View 1 (cartoon, rainbow, N blue to C red):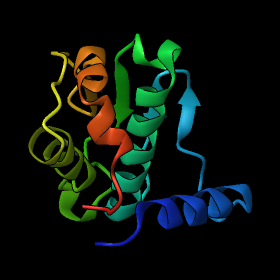
View 2: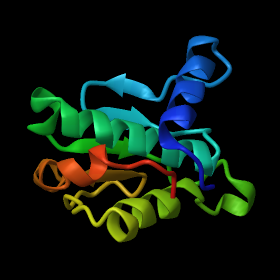
View 3: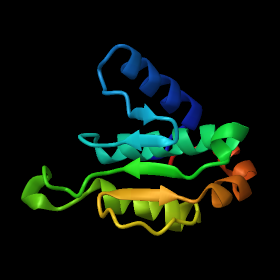
View 4: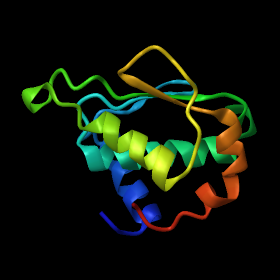
Amino acid sequence: AAGYFEQAEQLYMSAINEQAFPDFRKRFGEIDLHEQPVEIAKLAVLMTLRRHAQDPELRAQDLLIITGRGKHSVAGIAKILPAVRSLVLEELQLELVDQNNPGCVKVSAGSIAQARDRLLGLRTLT
């Protein structure tokens, strides 16, 4: 879904404020994308990565992205996890931290810091 990032971000935050979408921000350095449509989940990841890149305190820690395993998806096939992995690894070329939970993705703080200018320069959605 191509479009202007800032407009999409404003609309999404308005929808969260109006409680049309659940707030994905759970704890410091962690977002939860359960029950989000794939495109909304990708927008949430991009918004969060940009915030991490801007904030020195956030930039110092890894970002945990909870996607779920797909248990509640049609036929139990995960949709959010592969979309987020593709966005983070292939499109944004960030590094993941090894972990044992198959329903999560953890993005390396170091790779977010290295990609700071690129993340802050995003103008369109992928």
